[in-house]
Amino acid sequence: MLPCPPARNFQKVDAYVPLYSTETTMAIWNTLKDELDKAGRAAQGALDEGKLRLEQHRAKQRAEAAAASLGFAVYRARAAGAELETERYSVLAANLASAEAEVARLDREIAQKGGHASETPPV
Image 1 (cartoon, rainbow, N blue to C red):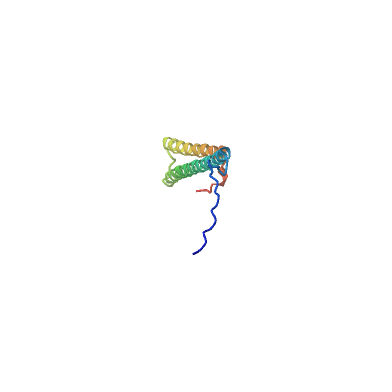
Image 2 (image 1 turned 90 degrees about the vertical axis):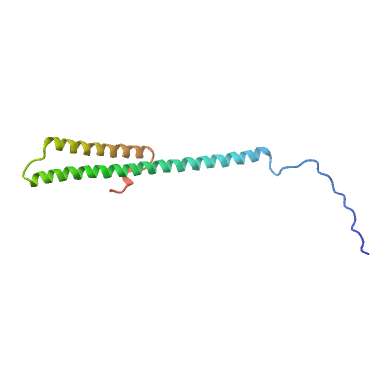
């Protein structure tokens, strides 16, 4: 018969002793929350700037279409041996001015938000 191992004297532990204190754990969670909030704000900022740049691109396309309409109207009138009617010219020029004003407004908005409006490629 094999001998029995000697009985060990285990001490009873009454309370759980955490590895980290509550303050340390809360500080870690607060830091994590702050970093996630910061990343969320950065992502939202990027989305907002992307929307502005898309809107700017569309405004540039509208400005180019308005300029093309004005140019074609003048070309067609001159090809027919006449001048473009004043009313027609006024409408087309107002459309072009409006579109250019929208592009300028969006350029300013992008510059305010920290983007560089000059970095957008021409359409």
